Length: 133
Image (cartoon, rainbow, N blue to C red; front, side, top):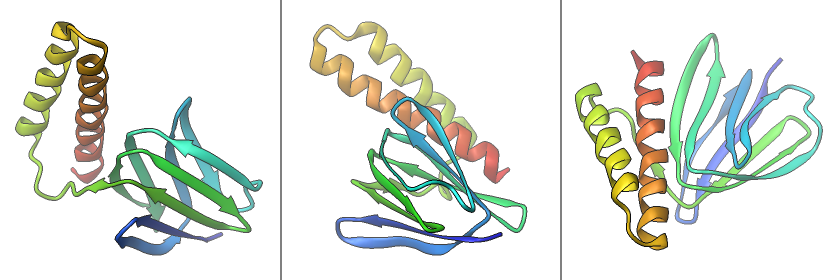
């Protein structure tokens, strides 16, 4: 009960591994992928990608992109990723508070959109830290 997953950015391969389960940050919510999933192409939002293998979850923060699922092969094409290993809970909590405040104080549509993206990243960082601890 294993499928292959590759996570790619325009300039490098982030990971190429096997997985028992994958959870993608879709535009309308999380998309769970198990072996035998129907063929699918879906847009991804900024958020947390989770890969499960041998009862262990590996979180990766994505910055938007696309995912293709076909014949037990998951290919994730993203604009950028963020490493979680160097982020501490205290830093992540402060970033979330800052992003929340930025949305509340946004005066233009662009600043509100930028703050919204930062809030999604900050939320994904906190979720990812929970998977690592």
